[in-house]
Image 1 (cartoon, one colour):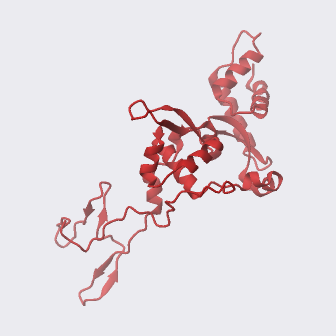
Image 2 (cartoon, helix red, strand yellow):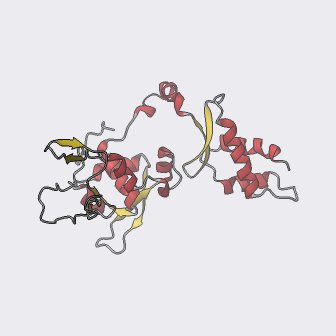
Image 3 (cartoon, rainbow, N blue to C red):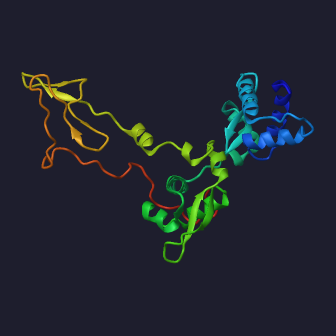
Length: 258
């Protein structure tokens, strides 16, 4: 069977499905539909069809596209039409997770599987309400109990709805912690003293911190030597572990707060 004959069937399956369809599921469904054929459809053929479908709907002519999100393929409207759809769906599109809920969800996403006590040890506050709201929104699930901890507490992990909500296919697609912190770093202004005693700006860094967190002073052309960081030097400010503006308090128990 030609790929051009398979493509409409794949589009129909993705469009009609209530959940994201994986490539393997599409292969099985197509083969079941054409079970009378001697030659079965292969995974590579379906992948080629999906590549053509995604390219087709990337055109500006279509207000929607086919994307792999939530663990499978699905039709999604393009972000340019968000405000239009928000009017149709009302508050459903306007609801936002609170800061406390986002903090709890981020900890679970990066540390899963994790218990409530471990979450609270990281946040420093009680997280009962945040966990309850995340369970209600089906962004997290209970995967079992920790057999190695006293009392065998419940263990939490992210759900398929979490992946669909954030447009990813697995926890591995989450941005790396190092990438998140790198985007928040502020480059310092390097200065040097001129011969007449004045201060001048320089584009060359006089010192930097390497990936291990050690202070490194580059070699100079005049001396060809590099100065070792002095542990007793009190002029080097310590980096604070506190994140400015972080809300470490949990939500109130107001049921109306979303």
